[in-house]
Amino acid sequence: MRSGTPAGGVRTHARRRLAVLSTGLATLVCAGLAIMVCLSAVRTREQIDRSGSPPLLWRSADGPVTVATPSSSDLPRDVTAARRLALNPYDLQALKALSVQAADAGDRTALVRRVAQIARLSRRDTAAEFWRMREGLASGDHDMAFRSMDLLLRRNATARSWLVFETATVLDQPAARQALISRLAASPVWRAGFTSNLASSAPISAADALFLEMAAAKLQIGDREFEPLLRRHLAIKDYNGARRMWAALYPIGDQNILVYDGGFRGLPGPPPFNWQVITDTEGAVEWKPTDGRPGGQLSVRHDLYSSSQPLIGQYVFLPAGVMQISIRARAVEGVSNDRFRLELVCFGGPVFFSQRIRVLGAGWTTTTEQFARPERDCEAQVLRLAPFTADRSQSVQVVFDDLQVRPVPGIVLDGSAEQK
Image 1 (tube, one colour):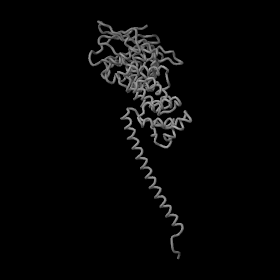
Image 2: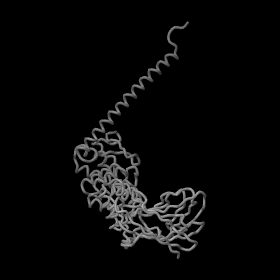
Image 3: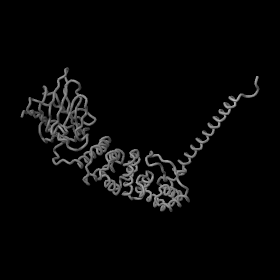
Image 4: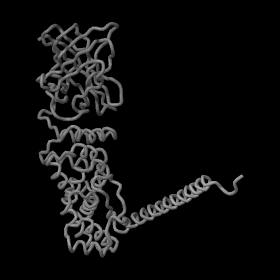
């Protein structure tokens, strides 16, 4: 019988001790890193509170928006940085280190100069452009601010929410709006999403001013950009504000024409004040010009069986009193007489008008009816087209045109339909 510990047991015991030591060391390292991160966060918050702007934070050009503190070894020490910069004025890492030194020392003049050098040498440094944007907004140098914002948005789409927030804080300043419009006029790739977000989140009066000034500058405003602002007005029941904004961007010569694009020509402008498909599963609705279709009429296909939900509609603002509504219709396929109806609904309220549309043969038929708009609790209305369904499927196609609503003062309510 042998005495002592076998060699294999010694190796096993040694491996266990090594594993324990490695685990302990890893734990200490992680704890140390956590403490460093917490101290860095506190230091960053203190710098923001003291200076009103964030400290300089650096990271790789294509990394996320969250950046690392410059205290790591990837930046040279102050003395080394100065020597390196003396030998090579294009050394970005040295410039970053000296910028951090200036920020820590509170030397604003040196900080501004160094960051400007970085921006001139590389338009791809995210941290420097972030700093320049905030600096420009705070100092009133809006051209610099939005030039840096432009560079950031072209390279880093994830930064948009932060940039929208920063822009919204100064949008009530006319100089800031004019500088922003100068950037928007070039139609940068980021414009539609950025402006749409701004319309959704900026103070509503400032957003109104921005779009009015964009229109005055003859900028082509996209539906995606403008629609969120209209819906914000409607959500707070600011109907006068919504009407004012719509009329400013899409003026109509004849104020008695109370339906927008009643000729179905595909005029510009977003819903809900332009035509909008309400349900797109029960029928096919077309009115906008396409490659194979000239536009100028509303074409509707339906099986008159699946659903009687409205197919298309728009918001209107009818004055209180007697109105006259008229529409032309022509059958293309199937028996469609009296199988579609026009409805007017008070926004958030009941249907107060419904009229079946006559469709007699292949010629145009005009249906005309008069109605009274309720005087109370009906400031905004929804005009919509819907089918009458039955107990069996019957495919039809109808085209509609010349939908009009006009005030008719002093006329007794009656209705008629005439065949052309």
